[in-house]
Amino acid sequence: MLIKSFPAGPWATNCYLVANEANSECIIIDPGFESLSGIKRIAEQFGLHPVATLLTHGHMDHVWSVVPLCIEHNIAAYLHSDDEWMVNEPEKAYSKGGWQEIVNMAGGIPEYRPDELKLMKENRTLDLAGIKIKTHHAPGHTEGSTVFETENHLFSGDVLFNRGIGRTDLPGGNASAMDHTLANVILKFPDAMSVYPGHGPSTTIQDERTSNPYLRHLV
Image (cartoon, rainbow, N blue to C red; front, side, top):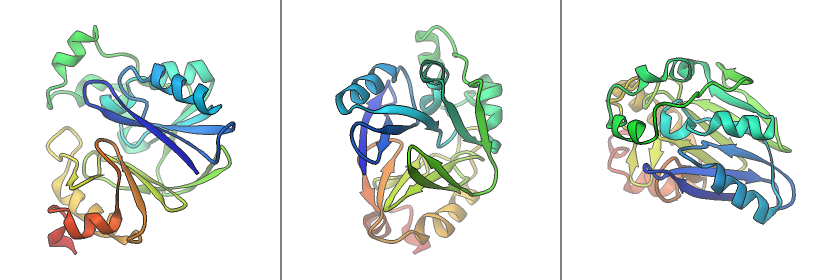
């Protein structure tokens, strides 16, 4: 499997391009702040053709470029239905967290709801770009946070980081739900699974199980 990424924008949000191999269709995960040029650069370098975009959750730093990306490639975006309100009324999602200065610098909040938005409710298996992707609802950082599993790879969004977890004090966050997700979703994955988070370097379930201070009370 081919997995390429780059940090997008002032929040250094990891945007991923995922494909079976070079010169094939690919999936975009979390097209963040002004990420189109980075996506284009990697797609051209490896001969990739985007056919869908997956959103781990609805926060601005993960969905900023979703509408122009979907228009440019005529593709759909996938988002859990519990985060739909964030793309319908984004100003309500950014009442906390230091977003406003960046929004002002960018000239305001862009349109976040693509024409073709496929809302996910139940866990399912998607078949996109010849890749089978299992979706796992993982609330805590937001109500609709979702982690995406394919083969031995997990795209964890802002649920799990290298030695950290996502904040629960932003709109949609819930500390109790996060603990439940970590114990009953994240820690159920095999130790050898690679983890590709929404921010920062990749890791493994084993490394986080043994070294992440936010998981120790759950192990």
